[in-house]
Image 1 (spheres, rainbow, N blue to C red):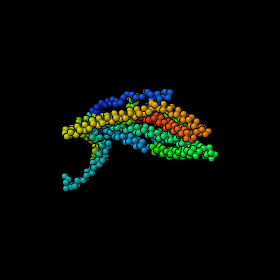
Image 2: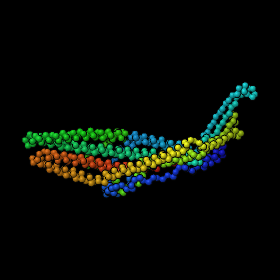
Image 3: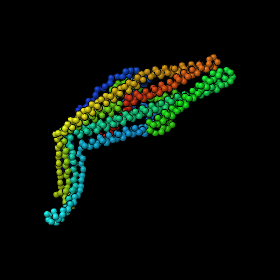
Image 4: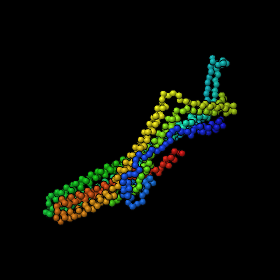
Length: 484
């Protein structure tokens, strides 16, 4: 028995084929231009004098440099439900691949049993009822298909590519989650800063109201000016209340995407002058960088899976050879089961040749070709979408430094204008309306600077996301997880 299996298994493995009828895979040409318009200007604006670093080599903990933000992102990676679903899908796809991979080798099993039968006297040759027993112990494999034309191999390749596609989709979900958490955290920081600005303005207006009421009592300030000061106080109070509500909504949105409560210590404090530190975006971007973006990688693996399905559909046109073999012991007495005379074996090869199927096999092949064409179109569409997302982010980036410099200059100019208008009002040279207009302009300019700073920081996060930053670093870990 041992010699039989030691001879048959290598032969089966040899016959299980190196042939594959799947078409040779060739990556489709990039359906997008090689360069983005304005990429050099955007890169120079992003550089800030720093040495550019490839985003593919920047791990997210290095990109998001604020420790509080890093901890919030880590919290989201641990608790977000969408990411949990994506991880479960990976485990499912990995198990399905291992199931399909197991079909390449025979499944060997051992069986032991006993059968007992009684023959009545009326049908017995001796005229006496008889009881017969049979004991057996066998090892063998059943219906093992010799993969002469690569059908099982193609199905294994399809399962592998489907698994890798699911893994890449999970990485895309993780990258989008990190970007969403960062965006919500930065929005909360900006709104907290706007709330602090509104409260600062409210306190300033209240102090001015107290002074104006005192001067009105002395007859120095008119009733109109006093009413205008009160109006500005109420406007500032309404702004403070609105931003307070917005900050609470921002925190709720952040905790929803994180999937857990975010401790106060990890929230931005909203103090002006404390920028969120983010890594710079490099210059010299090329559209080939999109090939490692997780959603593009996922689409390409899906295309490879569809390509492998064609091989399986082609192999179905050819004969299928299956083997069933076993070896063991059979005896009518349990005591004689392992004696030399009780040896037994069986070998039952089978072949199936498709002759007439009413066009079913041809239709299955046509379906496989159509699915491959669909996968090509989806891959190209994914690349085009990715290219546009990067182009949009770069178009914002190209003029960002100039816009920030102009807004900062506007804040300084508005501040100086307010100081002069306020001094003239205090000295009785102008009405309060001029000072109020100057203060409103300063307030709006400072609000604009906060919003523009948020746009700039969010743009860096968006560029990191749309370029698939750091997402190519863990592919080896994915392959290692298959046990190959």
